[in-house]
Every structure is written in C-alpha cells, then in structure tokens.
Image (cartoon, rainbow, N blue to C red; front, side, top):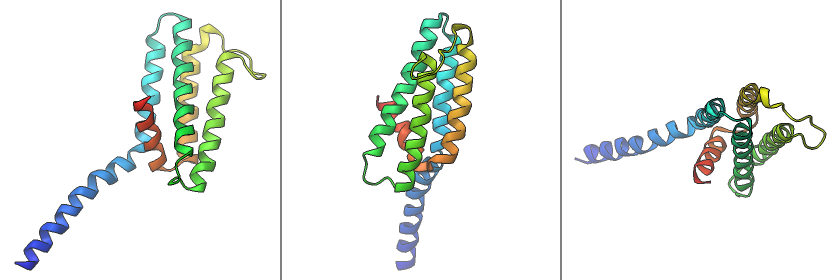
Length: 145
C-alpha cells in the first residue's frame, strides 16, 4: 500500500512539473510568436502612419516589459546584463523607426521590410542574451500591458 501511495505522489508531482517545464522551454518561442503577430499586423495595416504606430507601440511595450523584469530580485545578473543589451537593441530600433538620436527615419515605403528586420533582429538577440525563463516573463508582461 505504501508503494502505491508513493507511486501516486511521484506521478502527481511529475504531472505538475512537466507542463511547467514545457512552458519555461517555450519562452523564446512565445516571444517569437508575439513578434510575428506584430509583423503580421504591420503588413495588414494600410496606412504608413498606422504601420509606424504598431511598430512603435510594440517596441515600447517590450522596452517597458524589460524594465519591469529587470526590477525583479529573482532575475540573475547574467540575465540582467542580457536584458540590458536586448533593451538597448530595442531602443535603437525604435529610434531608427522614428529618426531619433542620429538615426535616419525609416521611409514609409519600407515599413513592412523594417518590421521583418526587427523580427529577425529581436529573435537573434533573444536567443543569445536571455534565458528561457526571462523570455517567458517578457511574454507574460506583454500580455498584461
């Protein structure tokens, strides 16, 4: 009887941990999916003004999400450094989009291509600079904004 109860407890714990592990491993993928949906919205938008607003708003939301995550004590120092690099990259993309801080403003007729460029840029930076758990936190915070 004890073996049966122990087996049930172990199986229950495995059942609880497996979905959590899958969610954590899915952090980078969820961030990529978020960026992909932004690109799709940009490509579907008809006016350059609307395209620019979508890109600017999305970049600002990611910057805010990173700022909120960096404040958490549970984030490792290496993730904090990675987040700083990731944020700097996003700020540069936002400045380039709007022609600020020495960047030339992205022309209206190139906004779809720029959205794809941002997507590739963010996916590469994401994979290199932050952990899976931190990527998932970014997605969660983006959903709450």
